[in-house]
Image (tube, rainbow, N blue to C red):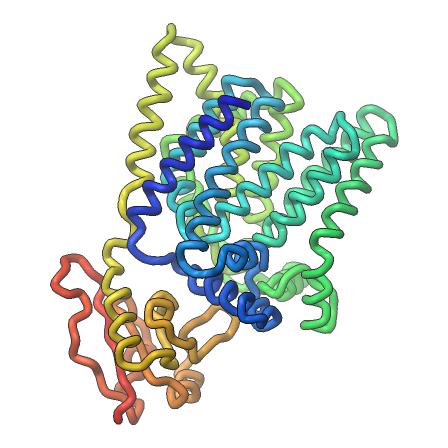
Length: 458
C-alpha cells in the first residue's frame, strides 16, 4: 500500500504540472461547468438536460463550481486512479507488474492530458478501476466486495455511460466462477453487485424515465443508438471509422506502449488474474468496435478506459523483458520511461487558444451576460455569457435554417479560423443586423487561432 500511495503522489505531481500548463478549458468543459453552475442555482433538471451524466458536475458543484473546482476534481481523482490500478494488477498478477502499470498510468501523455483537464475521464478512471478491483476480490470473497464493486460501478456509470461495462464484466466473471466451481455462492455476489449498482443509479434512472416517458440508461443518444443497433442500420460507412479506431488506440498508448500490450495479451493465458484483465480490456474495445457504425464517431477518449485496464497486460510484457537483463537495467529503463513520458504529458496544452480568452473578455466588457452563438463553447465560458443555441451537445446551429432562426436572439456570433472551410461561415454575410468587429484577439501572439466576432448593430 505504501508503494501505491507513493505512485499516486507521483501521478498527482505530473497532473498538477500538466494542469499548470493548460491554457484553456477543454472541448466539453463548458457543459460540465454550466451544469455545475445550474446545480448550484437549484436548476438541477435543467442541468441534467445537457445529457451528460451527472456525477462529475455534482462533484464540481460540491466544491463551489467554477474552473478551479473542475480542474481540482479531475486532477485529484485522475491521480487517485493509480491506487485501484495498482491494487488490481498486484492482486491479479503480481507486485512488480503493479508498479510498472501504475508508473505507465502516471505518465502516459494521453492519460495525463485528459485527466488534468475539466473532463469526466479522471473521475471515471478512478471509479471504474475501483469497481474492477473490488470485483476481482468478490470472485473469491465476501459479498461486501460485490456490494463495493456495484457501488463503484454505479458511480462510474453516473460519470460516463461506459461505466455500464464494469458491472457487466464483473457479473459475467461471477457467473463463470459459479459454473466453474459448481456452486451457487458466486451468484449471491451477482445479486449484491446488481443491488448496489441499482441503488446508486436509481435516482438518475427515475429522472430519465420522467423526462423521456420511458425507461432508458442515458439521455446521451443511447436510445437512438440502441434502436439503430437493433435494426442493423448503420449511420455511416464503417471502414473509415475502424481506421480511426486504430489511430485512437495508437494515440492512447503513445505508440510506445502498444507493443507491450500486444505481447502481454499473448502471455495472459497463464493465470486467472491475467485472463481477468485481458478479457475486460478486450471486451471494452470490442464494445466500442461493435457500436462504431451506429454511433458514427470515435475519439481517443473513448478507448482510454480500456487502455487503463490493458496496462496490466503491458506490465506483464515489461517485467518479462526486464528479466532478460541484469538489474538495474530494468529499473533504470522504467525511470527513463517515466521521465520522458512525464515530460511529454506535462507539456503546455492548447497554447494556440489564448485568443479565446481575449475574445471572451472583450465580449464581457461590451455586455455582461450576453447571448452568444459560437462555434466553440469555450469563448462563451470566458465571456460569462449565455449560450443562445443549445440542442444536446451542439453549440452552433447545424443548418442554415436553424442558424437564421436563432441568430436574431443573439447579441454576438463568434467563429474562429478553424471554421473558414465550413459552410456556416459564409452564412454570416447573409444575415442583417450584424457587423464584424475589427479587433485582433491574437494580441500579436504567434500561432494563435483567429477569432471573428459579429456584433449586433446598435
